[in-house]
Image (cartoon, rainbow, N blue to C red; front, side):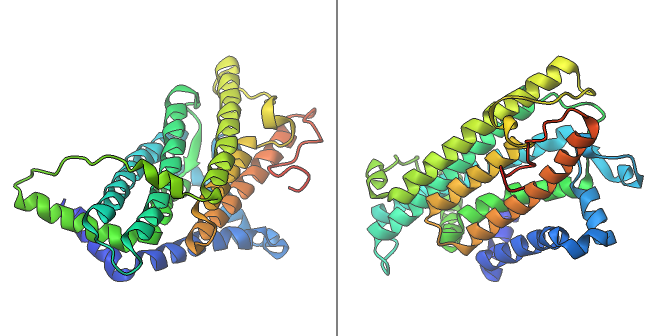
Length: 323
């Protein structure tokens, strides 16, 4: 608990939103630069590709000394489920306390409380996403024992699933930090006895705008298609064996080589819409998602074309009719 309180103090002092914006820019900029035509001939481009490769696209090289099993993807979703759930519950309790105790006086408790409930809503979408990914990592995917990913990619995944939920709650992060420290102080004074869980305010849903519902619809559209595409990949791996590969068919696979990546972009675009689209931190999060998945999809698409002579020429890498 003391470590958590220390991290809360650091975040409050440095400014969470500024830290997150800087982190997303630092993470996205090398990938964006690697897309530039002039970068194709530079060692930087090849180095970045080595970091981003995993599984079937991971080639034998000296970098294999710095890899971890691809099944470590499971770690991402364990961290994400626990961390997102913590932020979701904290946000819900804080939103409930605003109207109950009139903690917010400048903007107005009712109006600001609606903003916090919207934050809880997008965190709920995130939790739905990472819960499904955790399930798929355990029960759907059949990772080959030889499948590896670079340690840099592993650390990048841990960073993403820690920073993404924080970014979604950044609009009220200072208040959440204050509320958390306040509640910890109360618990300590009560010798560990916490107050009972309060109920969800259903009328807050009535104050949601079309952005929240449209964003949720886009999110679910991508969520369902990603589940279908992951099921196709999982069934193929189980049917042919972990070290064998075949051309996947069905759903969005008929249009692109990496439809699960395309669905991921749709999912996070839906989350962006659900936030209202006015938060630069969420835009930077989406830029990272798009750039990271695009470069991974291009490498996977090239691998399919080299592996299978009869690979469908009509398929694009990740964006139909574009990329």
